Image (cartoon, rainbow, N blue to C red; front, side, top):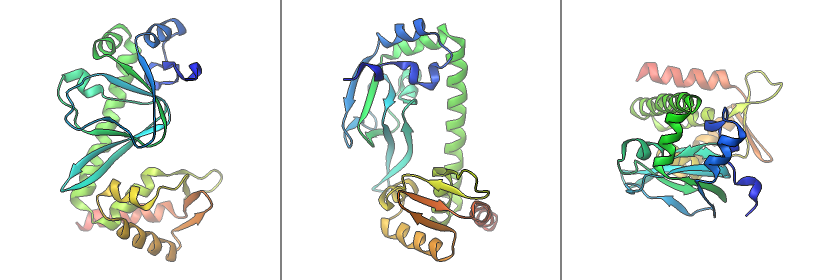
Length: 231
């Protein structure tokens, strides 16, 4: 494995630590490469180690009403498994490799020691957990108040980033396959295909090679807000 990827210096949680502290933590992790599609953690798994994504990305999933729901994507520089390391409870979701990934696995005891030893790590962890709670709260609100059409709109906005030099436009690159969007909003692939075609006919999205463009972000946002007000 390429040694250059085997460092926690790439992980945002440890961005304020000096090279010596990073090197010490590096040696206390086990490193491995995991191929796309392989499960790293099963739902309700009893382990409590923390995993850091040095390269690639993974999906966080749960099963609801017999359907797999994709909660979020964790990319290089991020981590997962911290809840079990903190409270010792079984895993609250499953983790599967979305791409080939390089993973660092840190024992819960080392993770907790790092939190207590470095205030910057503790503060950063609190910020990340607070952001995740807000995101999940928003998604719960969407699932309870919006029908699938507007959940798709909201997910497209969440996946997008502003298109440089284009006011009110955003881009998703690479574009997610319809099955992935369906898993994110708990619906069927056919429903996603139908709604995307409707958005395309309305001029709100366009397809490019390797990208999906949201042509009118304010309008999509307005449609979601109106749906919430009417619910």
